[in-house]
Image 1 (cartoon, rainbow, N blue to C red):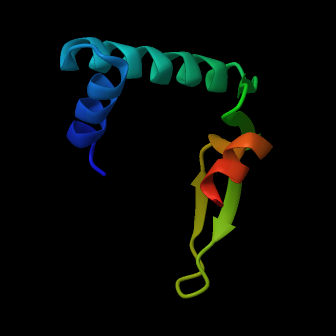
Image 2 (cartoon, rainbow, N blue to C red):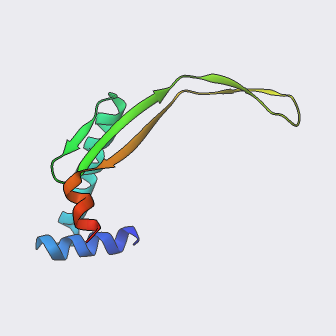
Amino acid sequence: MDHKTFISRLAERVGCTTEQATLLTDGLTGVLRDTGIDLDAAAIPGFGTFSTTKSDERVVDDPESGAHTLLPPSITMTFAPSVVLRKKISR
C-alpha cells in the first residue's frame, strides 16, 4: 500500500478529509521521530512499541581494497507488535 492509498483509507475509516488524515499521520510520525531522537520508547496500547537504539561511530575495513571508512553514529527504530495486534493479524 502506498502513502496516498493509506491516507485515503484512513480518512474513509475515521470519517474525515484526506487533508485531516494527512495531518494525523504527520503528527504521529513527528511524535515518533522526536521520541526516537530522545532515545525513548513509544508504546501504543493495543498496537505495539516503537523503541530506538543508537550505534556509535565505528571504523570498518573494506575487504577488497583494505580502505578504512568511518561510519557515523546512527539511530535505529524498531517496532514490536503487541499481543493484541498479533492475535488480530493471525486470525
